[in-house]
Length: 254
Image (cartoon, rainbow, N blue to C red; front, side):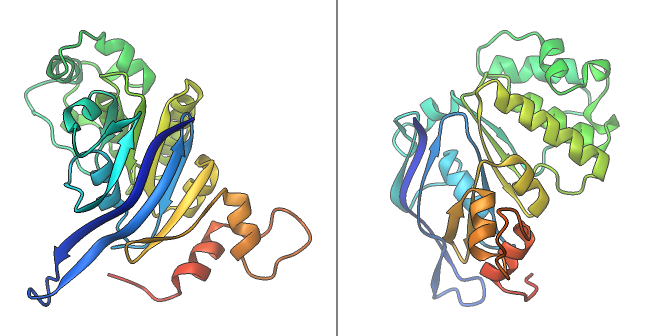
C-alpha cells in the first residue's frame, strides 16, 4: 500500500548569482513510497534532496504539484500531517539546562502525549544517558537522541536527513542497526544520504536525484545491474558508488 505519493513537485528560488533569474531546486518530482519501506534519496550536493524532504514534511511550501501522506494532502493539511510523521533534521539544538529525560517530556507535551522517556531512550540505546544534557553526548549519541525526539508521537513515517553525516564507522553502524530495527516494527522510513554503502545496505528502493530531478529509481541491485559498468553474468557486481558516478558524472561539486 502506498503511504507517500507526490506528483510533479516543484520548488522555485531566485538564483543567488542572478537575482532576476529563477531556478527550480526541485523540478517536477513524482514518487510513490510503500508502507513499511525504507526509501532512500541519493544525490550530490545541491541535487534537491533536503528540499524534497522538507516539502513532504510540510516544512516548505510546494510551489507546484501535490503530495499526500497516508492520504492527507500535505499542502492543505500540514498540521494533520505533522501528527503522523517524525522528522530528524541535519542539525539540532536543545536547551542546555534540560537533560534528555526532561527534553523528551517537553517534546511529548508539544503533541499533548504522555510518553515514558526511558522507553524512548531504550529504543535508541541511550537509557543510561537519561540524566545527561544533550551537549554532553557524542556525535553518534546526539544523532540517536534526535531520532528519539522524532519518535515521541509514534509516527507512521520517519524522515531522516543525512543521519550519519560526520559519524565514525562504529557510530554509523550503530545508527544503521537502529534504523533497521525501527523498520522491522513496520515504520516507513525515508532518508537522504551521500553515503553509497548506507543506501545500498538500508534501502529497499533508491531514487537518485540530480539538478532537482529524479534520474533513476529502483532497488539497489537493479540499479547496479542497469548502470554499473562492465555488466557481468552475476547478479551482484559493482556497487552504488559506480551507479552514482555513472549517472551524475565524475566532477566535484560545491
